[in-house]
Image 1 (cartoon, rainbow, N blue to C red):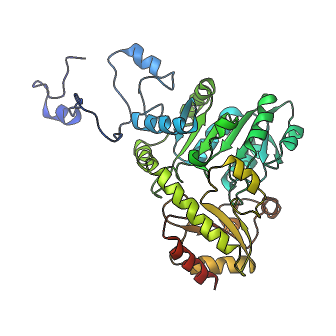
Image 2 (image 1 turned 90 degrees about the horizontal axis):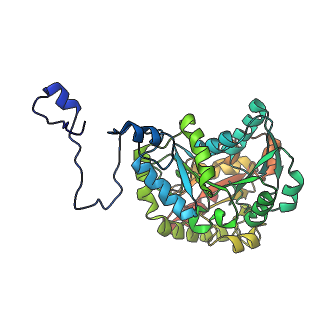
Image 3 (image 1 turned 135 degrees about the vertical axis):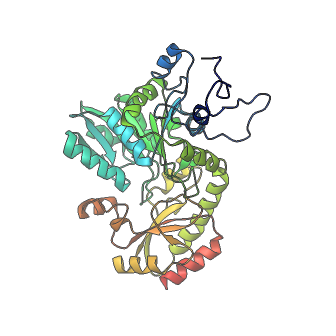
Length: 397
């Protein structure tokens, strides 16, 4: 096999069109991570191929198992979070499902914080309804409530560093300490904070999740997710399930995420400073009854956020006095901000959680999460802050 070359003179044209030469780079290296847009890899040694199919850190064999571009992303985010390994997926929900389905079985018990992203809450409800997994919800800041909720069959604790959309901050040191003491795995969605504002593994978390669609890629052109593991053994265990689940990341999407990751620090600084300006001014606006941003002293997580986070994030929500009608009017009136799902891109986005991101929740579940009919979520971009404030005030007028 080693003597074969695609340009061999004995090959016919039909064969040469299939076997295109693959150049090797000698004496230099690419500055950026290349896109390995291939579904699989060839081997000279069958034993090496067989070994590669059983290890998350082995040779590259097949796109569902591993890919050089995807692994570059996994190494980068794992390094930022202080993890031992990572699994990149095709979406943020792909990462969440990989972890929950990979670690829970019928009869298990899950403890989750009350204020959760709507997709996560819907997935947990589905686990309860279809797989016989039970769940108990507790406040994200209350280790004593977590301890009281734990049962012999409890397997996971699920938290969000900064919750979506009410921006409640979880007591990661306290909650993770209880979980570790009781032998329960702790899973933390760190999407809103990013590794620049908080690194949950440093506070005792076993698994950290991100929707890389958001801040890590940062340009509203990627859908992706990633799970980072504190321990190599846990990483390998979930990896074996992940390749069966098939939620693997695409090489091009991984490449776009790596490209976006390089400007994360600059973007997060602007996201946070713009959010500070808007949140503080909205808190004084007569049309607004409450602003939910952990950088405000009025927020219930203010003191904890000051200890845990190096910045308060670029997403917050606020309640309008006029209820749903006022929220709909506001969202149809913005001009610089865009009415769209998602967050974490360079542009400012607004949405109505009760009818979009959290539409799967019942009225009681919405109330328990603090989401009202007049709640608006704003994901603040990197535009000039005064242009954003002018847009918000004219939409509220």
